[in-house]
Length: 445
Image (tube, rainbow, N blue to C red; front, side):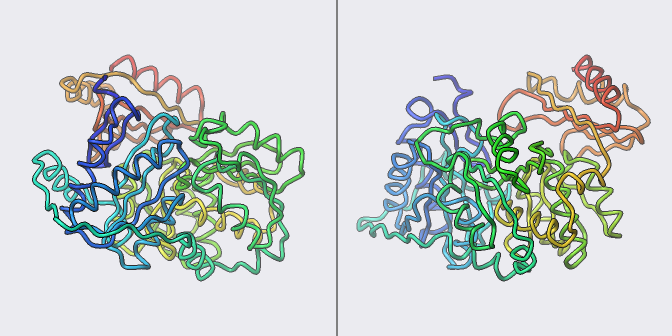
């Protein structure tokens, strides 16, 4: 087993099933979670990986041994699980999903009673329980219950928050591609209830992913072709756990996840209540323009959903997200939500009367380059010093790696918390400038 195949961090535990991610590890992690939150009612849900039932059984064993009452919700998108946890006032939840990782991976994502992920300090406390192995076991375990209505609270919240009549009047045709993942049992019916004429791509659950589960443009070929073939107004793609959204315009062109977030936020600010917007440090400058046009502040946080949602709660931000297509709507729930994101985009299209390509053209055009390089942990500090000397006149932000802003470009160099790599993001209006700056950064690394 390679140590790189198993990741134990404040984000949870993930690994390759049958190699690094074993039933024993899963049971121990579930025992630690149950002990940490004091047992109680804990929901479980999976995406569609073939290992889901095995992993869920191990989770059940760990929860039962430490006095929890597991509630099995079956296959369920992770935002739906978060909303169900809050609405039913459960003590916690565990999502069995490795998100955009390949099908041979699986993972546990831990949710606390308010339906949000653990704060970093809470996750550190949980890891102390895990590594110490001192668990609150019981002699008389409870039983596993189930509920096949796990998606209903999510649907109800969206219906409460949006003007669905505008969408129904427009009479959209949309192609959907849930990648055979956790959204596959729900997304077609969900959009049909909004009056959308739905064309399906990759909606069958087969135990494998028919495309790369991350909704990047290079993985959306089938969706793009289906949009052109059917004459649809929009194509909508989700990742395996359905917290991220990507869109394809009416011409079959992927607009990019940064623009998916930007247009969703723009739609909210133009047609709903205004307020500050929160995104992370790696998100495009397009959001600065969107916020400025609506006369609201843009706040940036460390990368990570929990950091964005924590700031949104603190300042009362109505909308925010991450540039990977993670759209967050406070009125629905403080989590990345591809379903809410779909409705935001459709409502924006309906009320503006424009096509998706038109809406994108109204926003500034930027070129973004993303790279990753192997860097030993011990060399990180020296690299940051070199970059500060190389780019001495830009505006600096050091709360999460190093971000430096210049008028014509910005970059964010951020070390991974779990592996010896650095992630590099450079953005500029000029593709040539973005490439040049990326090459200079890589040369320093």
